[in-house]
Length: 231
Image (cartoon, rainbow, N blue to C red; front, side):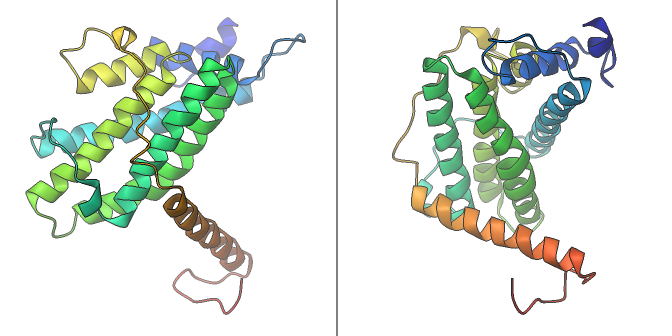
């Protein structure tokens, strides 16, 4: 559908025109029936990928600002609870994507990736880590957080690659210029020692309570700094 491809706000970038359509077509699931292209749903796929593009751009700019060089090992036990939660979520996403791709159900993998990008990464972890990096962290502590961010971005690129080969390749090779193309890489193995499902459940519960509280306060016309007695 040329009209859908040309309607993107980033029409000059092939990887931002074709990948949202590929996402949309795969996300529809099995092709047992004739389907009509819905431009608004293609635009939603574009918004998800554009959010990931913006997240990766921030991580890239911070890497250049701090002259970051990858390769250091991360001691998970010494990390802040939010860092451990985020790394656990990445491992959970890796596990889900691997299972869904092996079962020939890429639309389920996309659903997991979408939730991770739009909620866990861009709305939860990234705002927190931005605030932390503006604080009084040492250079070494900032490098650890950058390592977590860079590794997460590269992992998401690999998870996305079977469905969105263009944007995933552009982002990945921007972090790893020595890699000719992401197409040559293997799917990274699952690291069960990083996963902490109990911690994920605790942080996710806090996030849900926070979102409910914000909705209640918005409905009642209360400012966010005002408390609520009951949710």
